[in-house]
Image (cartoon, rainbow, N blue to C red):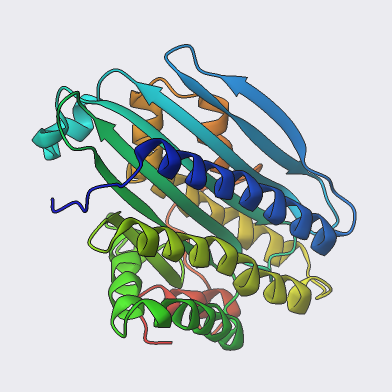
Length: 307
């Protein structure tokens, strides 16, 4: 892991934290406006081992059935075993991890579920250079596919990536397609977006600028889709299919999601970690959508695609 040294570690930590808190405020405010009825309720919490956060949840809005936008800043004297097994250079180091993570589950099946996350990690040991990196991204999980929505989502991602290099969008899109993949179902979780981890190959300022672009770009990517779909009429058939497909979301988060695993292994707040779960979901044995139906068409989209 080739890490550019930080010029001022305490200042870097404070700068990232200030941005993340402001980002949480901005996302909550904008989504409340898009919903038109619901409001986020804050639940501040402290972690006995070090750190804390503020979880904000919206329920039973006009558009958003349930969603959460979490900020956390946690610390610990040593890394969990899952981290040091793959990164032995982190053994014996204290750590700080901070980030904003969100999942929005709309009520209308024609509005996709969306997820976004930006995070900063630093591991320190006296007498040694701190090891740091950024991670994050955003991805979209539609139930009924609309090509213009997927194209808008990816065009927004491509535009925000461009100032950071010609290949950044392609690399982070590919990473997203591979990460949000349910191997046991042989399908992607949705239509992807961006995903990156271990971002420290640039200097700190450029890496930080990139996660700011990703964090702010989430609203540019998602809100127009909400506005385009929120007044579309739907019935029980669409609702039941939405609940069935939400089951896939649960499967991914419990089986594969690194953030869920890290949070639980470091003694994080369980309610906040599992905030990403939908309020309702269902499973059906050997379900097959009728041939030629809109539900069957979704399956054609659940593969890496050049949008």
